[in-house]
Image 1 (cartoon, one colour):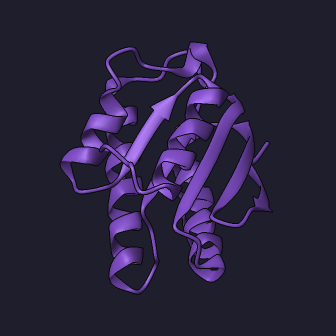
Image 2: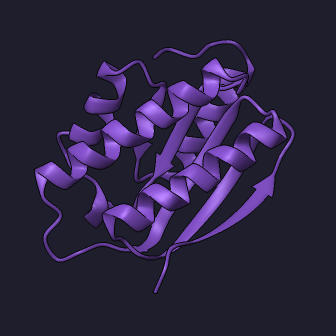
Length: 137
């Protein structure tokens, strides 16, 4: 089953609801499409809901690193081509969340503006902070 994207546009952000089974190359393809849609929408923020993605039974540190590095570079490249990006927020299921936030750290270290949470209210609060100009990276 391939990864599917559904997008919902709001005034200041796009929400992507991602479903399907995680496989690294398929996730990269889906992320490229997500960035393409984000660029076309010209909104500053994106909320990426991956709670319905079926993760492999073993999601290695190498896989986390590879996807985070790829996603960060893809987003940075899109910003250089005109994407009006402020931040990407990943909304994960608790069981998907790495307590060390390794993927987020990898992306941040490469210059991406990204946050990760399992709490929908926290994700929406971050979007509201950004809209009010109170974003604390």
